[in-house]
Image (cartoon, rainbow, N blue to C red; front, side, top):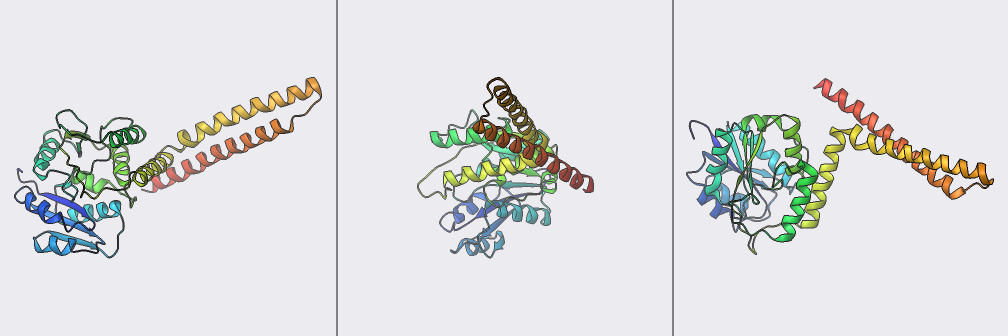
Length: 293
């Protein structure tokens, strides 16, 4: 690895049936393996420790995002130049680590994503999963990456030091990409293979999707409040003024006052003004925080 210290980071929750196989296949590929035992109630952590991995333990299950944070901190403490995250359910092929690391080094990337959807991987991804991730890609990265939810990633030390993460759940995958863009980190992708099997530890797709959507909304709204809240609010205020004009014009011409139209106009006005005010408050707060940083 040309003198670079590469560590593999494995978030794990109740993976005693798979983790030994993954650790065996990682031998000789990285300088160290760090496993975050995220509150497992089985022998996941004990097996990893017995096989020579560095184990970070959570007393209870905190979530995928919390495990990623712990792994990032442990990687920095252990002197990692490159950290590679991958799942512990044998869906990812450990031998492809070099593909991600080489792309990171040769192209001066800060983050390389192993994509299930790039040409050359020959994957058979279920249609519903591909469609769902396509929607998430559009929402979170505007299709700048093909697989925003891949857990197989390589991070430079600069990325590990720059990314301050807050999500505890699956929304962390999207949070990383949004904050990488804000921090000016260079992001690339390489094709990887994936294996789906009956024993894989898959997350509920509805819960996963909801977490990602809520995470995306949270970070976009706080990062661009004037665009996210202010523009829709302004449009609603303009529409409410048009409705007020129509209501008053009808009263002038007919002498009849439409209570229903007035209620709708008033509601629209209040909603629009609330959104505009919210956008200004968040914008000021974010600006103050950024100046403080």
